[in-house]
Length: 564
Image: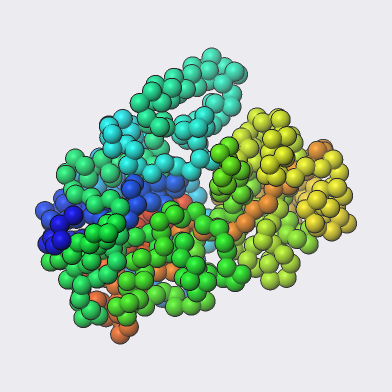
């Protein structure tokens, strides 16, 4: 830590957007410095599913999936009310495939097509079913050597055996490991690899999802010798509303002045753990739970506001991109959050009720739309928490939150309060404090829908997304089935954001806009420091990582004097 330093570009935050920006800057020949407040790279992106929503991407087209940015634009126009932000969405759609190909052709950041992965509002014009989602290729963490410890791990709830990552395709083989020789051999190889990893590392090195993406970015940065200052926070900018020429950094008790000839990029991860910003930008009552990285405290947004930048939206927005979560109890006594994304809610035999004992949502909608329905329901009946209700047979087949499929001894989860168990619906109603008569009526009505396969109240199972995440073997509707026989179980779910949607307003090149609507020279924002181009809507899988990557690319290209 020298007292003063001069570079072309300073990037604050080593999450997905910040690392992408630093990597592109290095490839463009810029002298770039990356600072990271914590001691690890990845931020919230390291714990995410790792999907990127990139309509018209060439990886999917090469795999035979037809899609276009034009169709996606029709979809976004239908999904997002008004015309605000349309120029940014157009820039995103036009640049997305270019940014991905740039990384894939010049770095170790490699992607594969997801194939079928429906958009979340499939009933709107332009919605896609195939080809818009891509994921990072799995990564061998051993390639990082000792630097592997610098990659923030996934949440504990996404690992098994204390540190082994598994993907969606691994789950049926692991569950059915004793059902066929092929499954047994596959599972045995995974476990043997994990045991070998634990001789050298604190966790498994077979990385996938968001962890693979963060490791690939970090590995590419290391190969290009891009300097990263860990434990270093950006605390102020040099300059004023007329232009930013650098920043002041702090590492412990030391300070570093960095002059940046081509600008400063804010990618500090948003304001997930900033109480003031949460109260200002999120709905009331303010959700208390967050899946954001613990170090995401609004540093970038605060710096922008200090310079007179404005946020989008200013007030009254939802402020976040949401998922329902349950509160887990870990072996070390701490608590965690399990995001109920798609593995349990869309399956037949589960229903969600509010504090009045009534269904309030199609349980198979996207995680974001589920929480939006929680907010709406809470206006008339307590819905924080809401309750997911099912039977023991359901848990044995599909799992429930942090309880893995195949689990039959539920007593540990009952003892620590993760689930509530009862032998009758009346007893369950009493234990979760909902009206017994109403709950019984709700279940009876739900079970009648299960018999016909038609959910007359919420249309569960009618969209591509519903059916994609349901159980195709269940007839007549893959998403709705009778509650079944006791014992019955309930689990409380709360709203939590997987990313903030309110952030600094920018133009299409990620330049932060001042109070007068003009760009502040030398100041860029991307990732969760930048206002979501989706205006609080959630079109499909990878809604945060797609724009984070694309606008990091656009910001650097602008700073380098090139056109994205």
